[in-house]
Length: 318
Ligand code: SAM
Image (cartoon, rainbow, N blue to C red; front, side, top):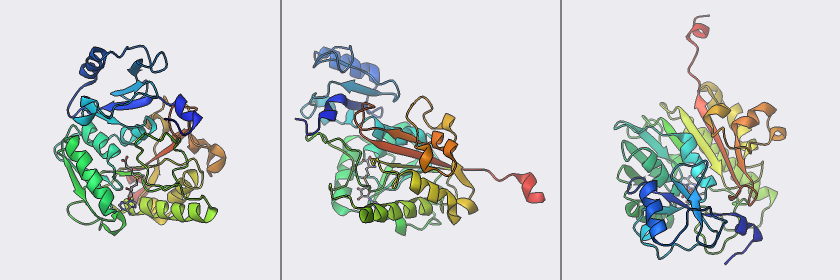
């Protein structure tokens, strides 16, 4: 089953889709099916709750769900733990008037997570540029019954921030294409990267980083945006801390007053933070999250969060 020995250190994660189910009922269901609430590494049938992500269950690494009713009916979503962090850090509002954007959505794991955190309320615009992947996205959204999501088959970079449909967006999730270098190869596992295991050259990484930066800068142009989460499943500083550093120094960040959200606001209980040596202000790495492939019981991952600082009225008067 495994393509990489580190895969044996990564539990099989199943996120309970709270649009359709809850964790207590899910636990009861799996116990009735012969699973034992003893932790994912106790036996082949062991499982448990995750310590960092609400409504995430951990099973033994080789557990298969493809014929399980809960999976087939959209009640559980197979999603790596680290890939649940971005939606939690974005912390979207759950009001009827909320407007949220997922800029790079397919296959839709994080979109469905956002929709659940919004309690199915408000509007979540889910952009996806690739037509084939857009079909996969629509299938996932219908199976997970994400009724507050409006999928849009478009390139996010071409979306006009002043378009009345999107101008009220306060929260934006950016999980763009990356090298996928953090993904531990488990051949049977559905991963949410779109990378093709291409040869990693500096040239390719630089091109990806330039694209990733352009996506963050574009998100910063949305007039009502307060919070932007940028994530990758890459382990390279070039696509992670370096992109964040450049985004913070960009005209878009400076003119719109964006800064990194403080650590207290970015999953503070997660111990592995950004790489201080790769940031201009080393202490700002505490605001960033990293996951090391295998070592943290997850794939390799990176999460950052930009927030708009409200302008100081006293300063304006001077
Ligand atoms: N967030 C997704 C999930 O959790 O299921 C995974 C996203 S995957 C890493 C990146 C996706 O962004 C790909 O499907 C890719 O086709 C799409 N994409 C890349 N550039 C885009 C753009 N400029 N506008 C919209 N979608 C884009």
